[in-house]
Image (tube, rainbow, N blue to C red):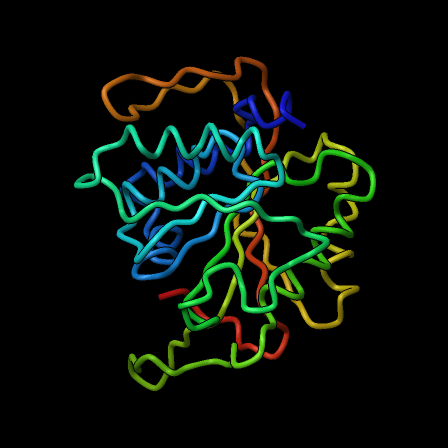
Length: 231
């Protein structure tokens, strides 16, 4: 587990790169003014990018590993609070989720989940799907109308943005695992090829992953919700 969490996998790099692009308005808007929770944070790259670039209310980095929890806590302590949204670290076991949600003080509809490279072993797809069904369908997580544009209403619903590498075990069954929950739907947002990547992060430049691979980004949301643009 510690070895897996210590690697910057392609899906995390792809998400971080997309968030850094001026054209990535839909993805940035999904996290704007929300309480964002990164699942299986590992190095915390995606959550840190969200905290730096997307103006969320808060970002909570979660991971099952206590070793990762300790490293992330130290990392957060070294960052400038003026440059990032409020950052928190929390241990999270997908098989034993808290009844009051991961961000207890927040309304469920204001919490958005994000994750990368979460399905890398057999059985992980079903476990993640089950966890998302609980996290996205908490009591009182109903839709709230935010406003109108013309005749179209834009709604605030709990959702998750998950980036996966199709080469990993169980990724091919992830979409069906989501539908099998009977309470979730999913939308494929993009598929991209990841090779050698360079992107500015803080005062340095991150260079990782030189081999070519594909990454798919999914948006998952409750089946009772109307799939409308995120706001």
